[in-house]
Length: 299
Image (cartoon, rainbow, N blue to C red; front, side, top):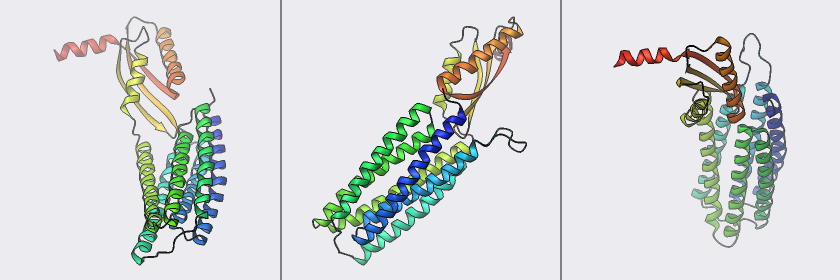
């Protein structure tokens, strides 16, 4: 299994490829969207522009995240990644609101110039390229077990579907349903805004040490499979960027030796890393008599 630094480097490679592709697509769509008089293609171009900004910001965050720990950051710089995502969400919201405003303005002013059908070809080609990028990033994410890169791949898929929907809207508008192009532009802007909100919520959740209960339940179940573990008294977890840190207190037979207790903690750390990719597990070992005494006092 690749170490954390190797995973970050792999994620960086995916981000760099995404940046190159999105820059080209954004420029082509913005230029041809104006040339072919297509509001939806223009909106999709601005959508790809937010992806450029997002990828650049994430790339900076990834490079910062793999910096070694120092006296000011004894746990490392892993939280640079969610901070970068938080900044990205602000860019998405800003661009989404601007595109929404311009799209609604065009509807209100009643522009009726039909778009050139060639704009649809641009969107179809874009959809194919982005779907290929989605497959590449998803395959890479699975190989290095990177949650961040998996999120990037999901964004690639969403952009591919958006480009395909844009092509349909352009064809419909060119066939006489001009309003369809304008409506699609509004829909694309709402997609940008929703994506920005989702990224914001996920980033804040991570930075505030939020963690999903279902993962804790999985960890606890796996720990209880150890024959010497009688009970899991408490278990907590938090995220440092894409890395999971777990604090768990287990109850064992009070007659076990120090060496046996140490071996149990080593096994738990190993199994959580191999099964759930937990980067660091801090295991506290206590005799089960403490828990039994507590239960008696409560009766």
